[in-house]
Image (cartoon, rainbow, N blue to C red):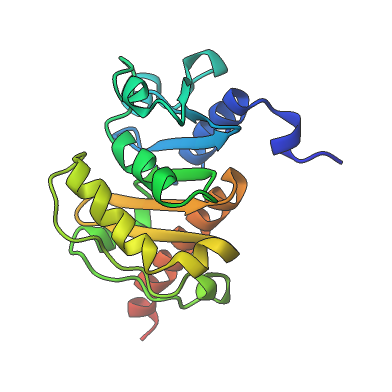
Length: 203
């Protein structure tokens, strides 16, 4: 049986993932973005995909550009505002082929107060304690550089599965070798965040 990555074209896979992570409550209508890199091409959800389309986008809506011509991609009229972080991660980590930025419901409770998320569930052990990038202007190159800095400290985790960075008062960004793994990790993190919160009710 072929996997979704084998059955779908890159734009189709992006469109599928966008619908999936909104339907599962892993991001909201306020924002988020998804990208993949395939054969030196970068495919990315367009700006306002949540607000204007509620993540019901099609392959024709996906922004496509060359990984070797980043300036042209940045100037695309539908380039996502968090796109600078995606491009900086791809430049810093040649083995990364998928990036997901999201606003998961339970993770949001932690980022609101910049509290780290410890791994309570076995499914989250490989990700370690999730921490934050240093304060930076949202959507800026400075923010992108600070995200890369945290990911550099988690490079071994990226090689094995994925690396994740929490964004103060914002959300989370995940880098992985493939999109399905990135989505899997996002869901594990959100479930683990719920468990951390629920412990207070059990104590």
